[in-house]
Length: 64
Image (cartoon, rainbow, N blue to C red; front, side, top):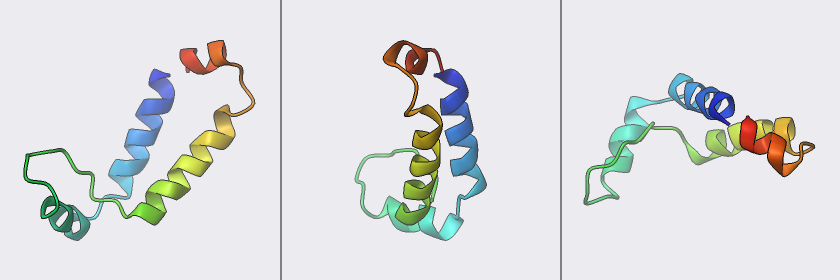
């Protein structure tokens, strides 16, 4: 699972936008880590990631 998480985080960082990040900070009172990626882009990354792992069984997914 570490490989997949690292890949997803790299995609989020690659698609980060400072304007989106700053705008997102207005919605949270507590300090959180924001990548600054629009929802549509996050959905696209999620779809691409899911297609890579959906055919695997639970044990294989746990090892990704």
